[in-house]
Image (cartoon, rainbow, N blue to C red):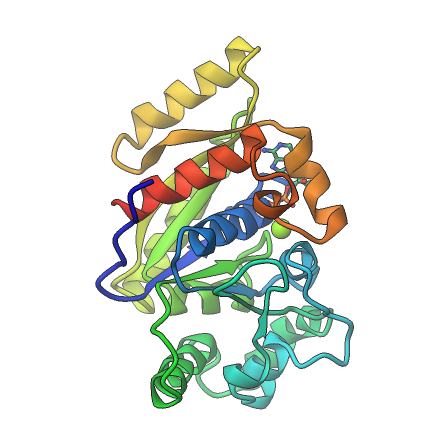
Length: 269
Ligand code: ADP
Ligand code: MG
């Protein structure tokens, strides 16, 4: 296997879609694990109060663990909340705790409420450099399914948006609203933001519908949609209950191979 080229600078990507249950968390966790397994330095930021990404990567996130909440609300340095993923080398996680649910409201009253994550990441980069730690290659942010201040912080901290799309009938519904929101962010808060990557997930090759939806999404977004598609897979859905990504839970499963391929493709673009 040919080694993948490191990006010239850290790629900050927010994984977003206002629909719930479309595979945001699954994509964040497995793309991150796949990238780290491929030799990249990777960090996951869990900004969803549910903390599903933290769970799936085996990171403790009961309410007294230092978390992204403390970073956003209490100015705690990111370096004090990140924890290494126990199963995957070169993969760091900033966990979410349930306190984050309240952060949506607490942020409203704070100075620079939209820029807090962006600033914290800038400081963290400096901290890593000062400690002689390697530069991060990928930062993936797992968002809640809403456009509150948490998601806005993710959009402001990122350069790229990765949109997972579930290959089902209502796939494109809500997408135009997501794109409008992204345009609003571009206009007012982060002119560098681009939708760089769309990943088709939960693809069921036995149905015509999945193929039709995939064709339709590709017709709308020919540049953005990855050629690699993530199949519907029991192994993918089981892995979180073992607190693992599918990449470590069952490395030769079709689901793991699909995420490894998608990660390789993304890194080549
Ligand atoms: P979101 O973060 O967008 O709410 P999740 O990543 O939590 O979505 O996925 C929703 C549900 O679908 C979860 O139970 C997850 O395990 C399952 N799931 C996600 N991707 C797949 C897949 N490729 N095959 C089977 N189940 C999947
Ligand atoms: Mg989720």
